[in-house]
Length: 76
Image (cartoon, rainbow, N blue to C red; front, side):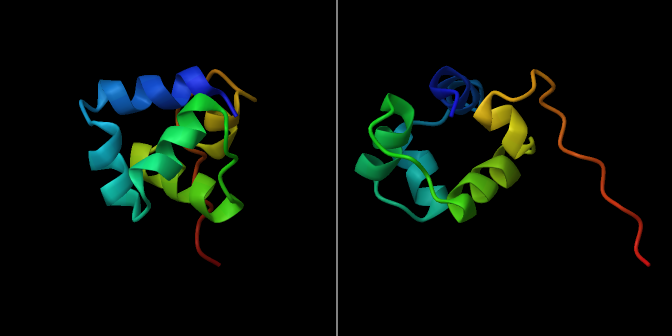
């Protein structure tokens, strides 16, 4: 996971770790562990963070430099 990218997104949103952790429904210490690289978020949490920041999981993981979320497929 790209730790700097996660911190930058939070700071760009002008949120403290505590505010973001509350929005995600986790403890501040858990979120701090993600930013500091001491903990790895679950797949569910990774998706929740991507949804919160309106970006893709690939962007959070550092697999792309494009922060745009993936295009939604049309309903069938």
